[in-house]
Length: 139
Image 1 (cartoon, one colour):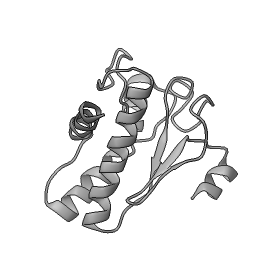
Image 2 (tube, rainbow, N blue to C red):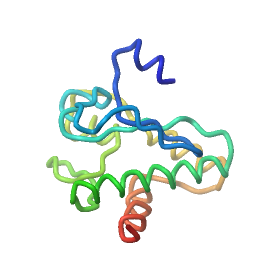
Image 3 (tube, helix red, strand yellow):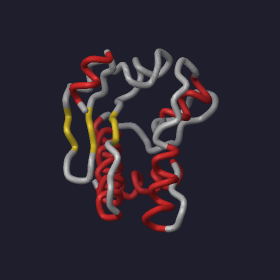
């Protein structure tokens, strides 16, 4: 996965799966994974697609922990991105809808479909923000 990003000129700070938070670059480097209107401003990570209930749950936990850790590190609050550009937690889809410069919709479909397949429920960015807040409070 890292290799294909290298070939396509896309750059994120970390990759996250059920077992690992793989930090490939310092957050001081500008990412190139969420479009020109978001790249200079946000720490970005890519989620692999998990193929088990346990793996998906562990990946969400790792992503939420990483997000909480970075927010704490930079003394930022846990806030959902907003149409006016405010907020600290953004999905690629939210960048597409609110900031522009990209047309991607991840991880919305992945979260929705995988949560439904493995747990028979929905999972969305609001659920993710709640999980991030729990980790943030524990740090």
